[in-house]
Image (spheres, rainbow over the protein chains, first blue to last red):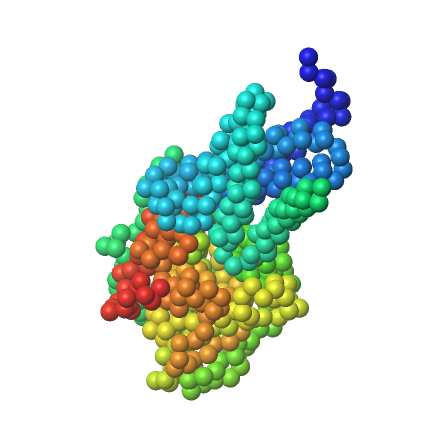
Length: 207
Length: 320
C-alpha cells in the first residue's frame, strides 16, 4: 500500500495544474476576443511567442526543483517535477503545432528546409524531439523499470534547456535582453548542479 | 483553410507609369479648362490638419494595389519603431510622448537649396494622394497600407540636388526626452537610412504624412516619413528630421548593427534569404488566427515591373 499523499502536496499539485493551464486558457480567451482581449495584429506570431516562452519557463522551473529540494530538505518537492516537465512538453508541442499548422500550413517542403537549413529551427526541433523520450518515460512504472538508466536518460533535460535558450536567442532580431535573461537563469541552475557535484566529489575524496 | 480570390495585381494589369502620369496631366488640364469640378484640384496646399483628417480628401492614386488594406488598428498597433521600444506593441503605447509640432527638417549636402525648412514649408506645394501599398517586413510578415502622401521626387527636386548627389540619407529624430527607447543602444541612434538617388527619385517612393485619410499616428512615423514599397520595411525611415544628399553610400542603422543580415539595398527578394530565415513566403496579416495566410513573396514586393530596371546588371544576391 502506498503511503497516503499529504494534503498540502495535493493542494500544491492542484494549484500547479491551474497555473500551468492559465497561459493556455488566456490564449483561448484572447483568440475568442473575450472582453476586448485580442492576440493582436499577428496572432500566429503571438501564439508562437506565448507557447514557446511558456515551455521555456516551465523547463527552467523543473530545473529549480532539485536545487530547492537540496537546500530546503523538502524532498516532497520532487513530486511536482513531473507535472511541470509534462506541461513544458505540452507547450513545446503547442508551439510546434502552431508553427506547422497555423504558420506554415503544413507546407512540408518549407518545414523540412527550415529544420535542415535554419540553425535556430534545427536546435528548436532537436529540443522538441529530445523531449519525447522524457515525456514517454515519465510514468512511475517506467521510472522504476529503467532505474539508473532513467536518471541518465533524464539528464537530457540539461541539453534540451540549453537548446531551448539557443533557439530563442538565435531567432531574435537584435534585442537579446530577454534570451540573455533566460541564458543567465539557466547558467545559474546548471552552475548550482556543477557546484553540487564538485562538492560531493571533494567530500568523497577527503573521506 | 479559407480560400480567397487572388486579388494580386498581375503585371499585365498594372497601369504603365506613363499612362497614369498622363492621366494626371490630363486631369489638371481638364480642371484648368473648367471641365472637372475644382474640388478635385483643391488639394494644392497640403498641411497637417489639426483635426486629424485631411481636408480636402487626398485623391485616389490609380496605381494602388487592390488587396484589402489591413485595419487601422492593426496598422497602428503593430509597429517596429525601436525608439519607442523593441516590442511590436511598444510604439503604440509609448509614442504619445513624441512632439510632432513644431517640426522642421534640415536639408544638407549636395544640393543647391539647403537649410532648415519647417514642415509647413515642406508640404505646402504638394498634392496629397492616397496610395495603397504592400508593406513587407524583413521578419516575413506583410500588410497592405493606405498611405497618404506625395512622391519623394517632387520634394527632393525642390532642393535642386547637384550632379554629385548620388545618394540620399534620411535621419530620424533621436530625442531621449521624447523617445524612451533611445536609452538602449540596440541600434545606432539616430536611426539612419538611405537610398540611391535613382531609388529616391523613383515615382513609387513616397513621402507619407498620413494613413487611412488621417494624420499619421506617432507610432507610424509622424509627422513625416518615407515609404519605399519594394524594400523591406526598415528601409522606410520614420519621423524624419534630416535629409542629406551625398556622393558616398550613406551608413544605415540596420546595416551597421548586422551587416551580414541587412544590406544597403534590402530589396524584397524571395530568392535571397535572410541568413537565419527564409524570405520565400510571408505571413499576410489581417485574416485573424485561422485565416492568416502564408503567401509567396513577390520579387520587389510585387513592384518588379516598375523598379527592376533600377538594378539591371546588379547581383542582387551580393547586393542584398
